[in-house]
Length: 72
Image (cartoon, rainbow, N blue to C red; front, side, top):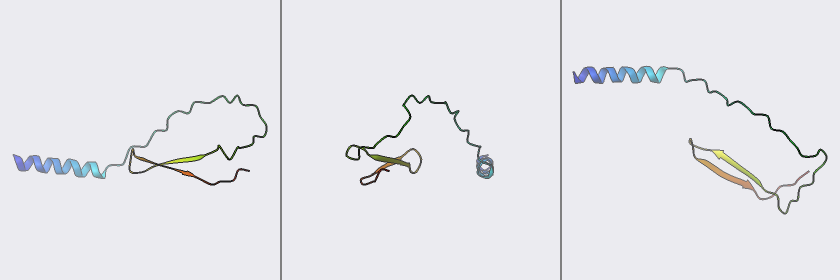
């Protein structure tokens, strides 16, 4: 009986490993209304920052940033 259980479990795991992954579904995008006036804007480099967060190994994200950049 135990051998049959081990064989059935092994077969189920082998089939699951060979199956195609499910297609990821993208969340529906909600349009955002922009109310800022149009025109040119100047960036204050003294108070501006550029921050980046990269997902690494699943739910963990690694934050980083730029200390020197030039705005155009």
